Image 1 (cartoon, rainbow, N blue to C red):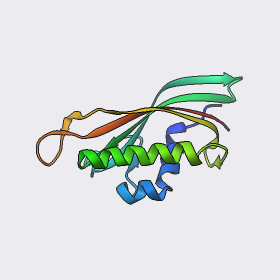
Image 2 (cartoon, helix red, strand yellow; image 1 turned 90 degrees about the vertical axis):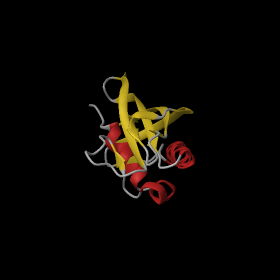
Image 3 (tube, helix red, strand yellow; image 1 turned 180 degrees about the vertical axis):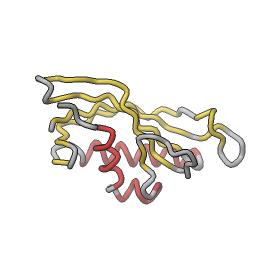
Length: 134
């Protein structure tokens, strides 16, 4: 049984005050046609079953898009801090998270989306492995 880990993370982050203080409810699994920044984009990039299709490890990218560079970094830090400190061991509507392992935060400006000054939009990306079961 597969878990919608993207939805689980999005719902979780929308409930975290340090994240919503920056983005309100703009935590997405797909960027809307007319986005308002800053925002968080969650994308599952891989992973799979660890035990009989019951326990799975999902590879996920957390992309924190700014306004300014510093705000994008603060947003990425807030997301990862919340995920690594409060997500595991809790029953969520979508499933139970047993482990969250985050990589380092990498600056990854988006050249396809310009900020208000015409520069590539500031974005920080973190690769995360979320282990969960139903």
